Amino acid sequence: MTRRNRITNTCKPMLAARAVALVLLLCLGSIHGWSQQNNQQQQQQNNQQQQMRGLDEQVQEIKSDVLGIAAELNQLEEKLLYPSGTQVAIFVALAKGDQMRLDAVRLQIDGQLVAHYIYSFKELEALRKGGVQ
Image 1 (cartoon, rainbow, N blue to C red):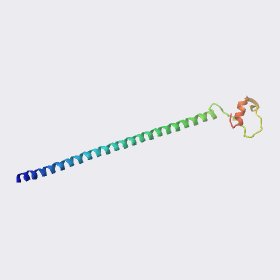
Image 2 (spheres, rainbow, N blue to C red):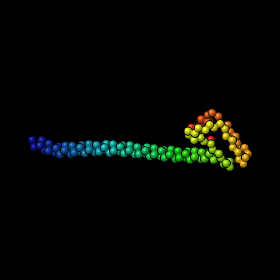
Image 3 (cartoon, one colour):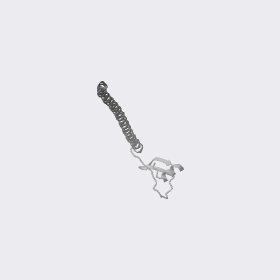
Image 4 (cartoon, rainbow, N blue to C red):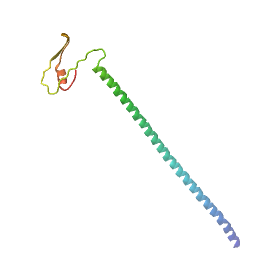
């Protein structure tokens, strides 16, 4: 019986050591899994931040394109309104509610006829609606 106790007594510490080793291995495995999960979450956050930066850059590019187009339109409008080859520019417009009936325009400078224009029906309607020629 003493021999049995001696075998049992020597096996108990070995079993306890094995149990402790098993628990440590399980803990290490779960920590490793948890760290991988955290790494995946960090990678996803980094990807989302990179996508947001990319979208911000695209928005800034679009804004600069729009500003460039607006500047070009202003230059074209200025060229149209103020042609560089003319010395005098005459613009014709009708005031809203004006009862005057405009059919044609004759322009004389120093008593000499320099321009004569007869308006079409569509042009007259456009002038009545606020258009400028």
